[in-house]
Structures are given as structure tokens and as C-alpha cells.
Image (tube, rainbow, N blue to C red; front, side, top):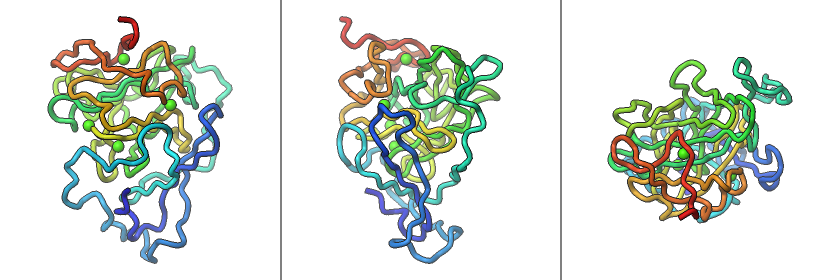
Length: 280
Ligand SMILES: [Ca+2]
Ligand SMILES: [Ca+2]
Ligand SMILES: [Ca+2]
Ligand SMILES: [Ca+2]
């Protein structure tokens, strides 16, 4: 558990699980005020919190609960979150059909976490990536959405170019630690995150970890939690395309190492349909 962020924080985020994943937008990430553990220092004094100490070069994190959805609701960012979710509803009308000229905001279940390069060969900070898959017949937009985990990771996805976080019906979208094709293993990326395993960025731990995709208001769009041993170095893990749903991707037995050949030598199917885990 990370307690690094405890000191000096007047505010932290809590993952609140309101129901199971079958409920639309069942999970919301909310800021709440802490009135028991915090000191009286103001928010500007939180620089002493975690993220800049030594020992943050490891890509592994302490074991938590193993598989399944996180049941521990406590979430304490290790430094001051730059995230101030609005209480206002999303400006995009959710009932409107997304089109190429007017994509709609992705909601729960619309787009799923479909493939993860957790432990690339070489430098993880340059070569991790996440593939999302749009399961709808609409054009979807995830601009200003978040990547987070149950610990300290929280980061607003950055578009690689204007409008790049719009994805066509049935299309794939690649989020990368580094969008340089020649450095990241040969992946065409539409969005990036700041690779920090401790601190204000986001990373895919090579041990156990969680991946949350949350919308602008902090509502979970999809989440996947994986256990230690899930990642294989140099091979992405992909969801069997026969099990493409927010709930089916919670079951790690529906995932398998991908065997597509990436340009720089690792295995994976970024931007392409995943392998059928049971077809051979
Ligand atoms: Ca990693
Ligand atoms: Ca993480
Ligand atoms: Ca899920
Ligand atoms: Ca893929």
C-alpha cells in the first residue's frame, strides 16, 4: 500500500464501487475531503509527498489483492492530483449517435481494454502500450480521459495529434508511453501518457496492477486488473476477440500472449485483431 501521499494532502481520491460491472457507469472516481488523517498544511505544501524519493525505479509494486476487481476502495495518489473532476455532466449528449464529424464521448462498455504491452523487451518507459477496442457502431471520443490504477497512477491521456483520440466504429486506439514509432517497438500511437510508476504518471507494473480508463468526470469506462505472472517479457497480452466485453476482460483466462510480429522484434497485435486464444 502506498501511504506516501498521506502527509500533507488535504484531499485525495477514492474509488467508489457502487455496484457490479453490469451497471452502467457503476464506478466513479471521486475526490473527497479527508478530515481525519490529514495535516493542516495546504495543498501547495504537498511537494514532500511521494514520487520523488529514491527507489522509484522499480517496475514492480507490492502485491495487493490478486485477481478480480479491486474491493479496497482506498486510493491515495502519491502526490497532488491535477485532477479536478467537474460535477457538471459531460457536454456531449450521450444519446446522440456518434459520427465521424461529431463523435460522441465513450461511455461504460463502449470501448474496452483489449491488449496490453506490460513488459516489453528493453525500456518499459518507452515501449509500454495499451490497445483499446471500440465495440460500438459509433465514432467515439476519449479526449481528456484518464488512465489510472488503484494506487498512485493517474494521468490525463494526451492526444498525439489534434483529434487523434477519436476512434472509428469497431476501430482500435493505441495509447503509448512513447509515441515515437522507432523507439516504442513500432507502434502507431494515438495517445500517450507520462511513464511514471510512482508519482503523477502512469505505468503498467510487471507484477500485479490495474488499468482503469475513466472519462472526464471520473466514471470508469473499463477496467482490467492483472496478477503477478500475467506479463511475459517481449509479448503483449491480448483479450481473445470472442470475449470482447467489459466483464469478460476481467477474467484473465480470456487473455493470452499474442504472437503477431512487431517491427522491432517483440510480439503483439497493436492496431489489429487479437489472436484467438483457443483456436489452435
Ligand atoms: Ca512495465
Ligand atoms: Ca500502475
Ligand atoms: Ca473490465
Ligand atoms: Ca490487438
